[in-house]
Image (cartoon, rainbow, N blue to C red):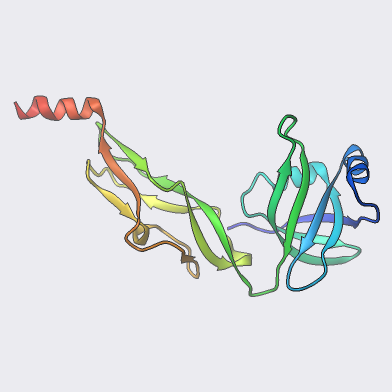
Length: 190
């Protein structure tokens, strides 16, 4: 599960391209906090610290803004296409007990038989989960199965309290024979 990262923020008083550019030159990244009918708040955060936090998908942040700590979820981040510098972040305020809709990666655990490979149909899946309990990933488990074996959405290992937003019979991954494995099967049959 993701643990909340801690980050200090400062309210912005100047707006526009020029002000944002100046903030970035000072090592600060402009951001906006939205949510729950409250007025949007414009802030800046330390660019280096936020870059480390954004390495993790669905990052929950305990944001310290003028001595008040509040939990926020990273909704989106805009990067410069050339330099890959984070130019802006959109944050959503969280309320204790709130459930959020997030996309998490599917990790394959185990392996298939020799001469086969695991074909992952869904690299990520959507979950509805408590904002404070967002998993880093869900697991598709394989135990040396042969060609034709399937993992469906209902077979995924999903944390307690998380709800998969996918039909139970949706194909997540399957075991398929490789060309070499298929040729070995044909040779064995002769």
